[in-house]
Length: 429
Image (cartoon, rainbow, N blue to C red; front, side, top):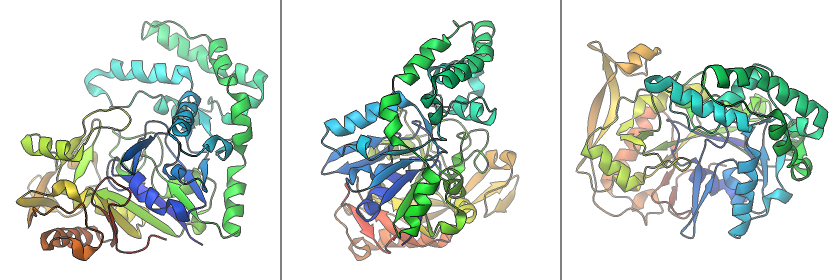
């Protein structure tokens, strides 16, 4: 049975939750392998919207085992609030089934404080973080002063680690940011309050997942954010602090690369971005406003308005190359209904020279001027389409052209928010 990675092909917010939900009832394990609660994956079932920040998007399937891998950073307050919210809305009680890697790192109160004050201190040079403490937690992980889930099992070790981590951070808060020092005992007490609830969830996730594959179970690896927010391959420094790329699935879960069979990139039928950083096709006029309003382009986690623009084929093609996409899942095609002409970015002009691949340097990408090809739009309502032939000809031509430009077959198309509003061309499993 296959294991499959589903990840964003642009700058996040592509609708990964919808793609993942399509596979949910045929998947045995849904594994988050990177990121934290700076992500927001939305699934709409029977008109009811569910937004997952830490829980894997497949949790609405009660027979599936949700997993948080070692590559995830976990705010326990957020996790249990999310579990309670899902339970209160009649969803599965994932507290009984959730598995969390003992090596996953914990977002503490001091991480969120430092994230917010640092971003304010940067001013116009800010990165555009969500202020959830994700970046500082990954920084502590790399600096080898992080707090891991397993540390909650040993109070003496936990208190010692928190105290050591705050020795430098408190000096920074007091002397640089003019803030009060943080009490290490208060942080430790808060973390220890969750021990009894977290203990049953802790697992040797690499062994669990590899055993599941040996037992012919279906594993779905869910990436947060997207390729172009990857700390190594994205538009650095305007990126996240982890590896949402397909290769990150192995690192963030403990499953070897030879055990991953499919990689599905999810892309919107246009382009959006949240936060700072270059975006060649961004529309800073009423056209961008129209896409934003028609598509409901406001962050699922922060509520921030997303920057909107035309589809950038070079951005998606670049992600396809690095991640080895086997399939693309195109979302929000219905948002483009009503446009007479729909431009698609097929190249850039940089200092008077044209290129048809995404440049390798930040400077060139920052100066890239999009070269557009205009395709005919359509006016017909496509939200009821369930097969490719149900789409008007112009919409089919649009999909076919994107497939050609990106070099990857489009296997699914979202034509509305609802779970059922999907066109399946090729089975993703």
